[in-house]
Image (cartoon, rainbow, N blue to C red):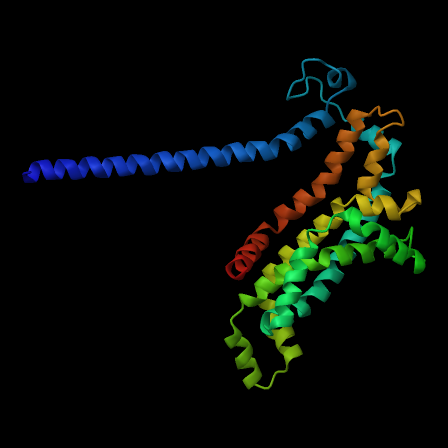
Length: 294
């Protein structure tokens, strides 16, 4: 084979490799786009439904964009159910439980990450296994415990349950973030005379800020969207959370007031989306930091 033929063969091989990489990248982008459409479809349809008048909701030929958009569904939603009070209950339970879970999980995660022995490995394994327990399995023991403490139909009791339920996941996430912090920084602080608690507060905790924000957000969203515990433990209408109140738009015979329900569900979804949008950079940084060691 002469030099010309060799260069031609090499050029064809290079072009073929470039074509394969381009095809692979195009397929990846197409798969990502399809996944984004799959995720966005329910939310976009919810927005469309929330602004449709009853005539369009009952149409046999539904459309994406309302022909006669209206705010009547939102007015009816607020008139039919105490959405603001329910949102306040959800906000209180979610915020307080997320804060308590983070305060408890941070020193525990530090101990599991820095003191690695059989006990810490067993504790980490138990934390992971506990996430597989279904809600139905633990609701009866939790109900009996809260009944003995006179905390059934109590916001404090619900917050305690949310803390217990979110603590294992928060602990597992924060353990990975702590392991991503170089131990040399803590050793330097120890040389300067700092104790374990001061090192955790002054050195480790500031570096864990992205991970703490990400973990707190997941704990908050979990409690904000939680339905089963709130349904079982809260009986007084004035104490019920937003997911429970949304079920009241379904009548006793199963007839759903679709327009107001969509409007209320849209309002219930917005806080989560706005919170994600506000601190998305910290969430991304925290998740990537934890993924290095997890």
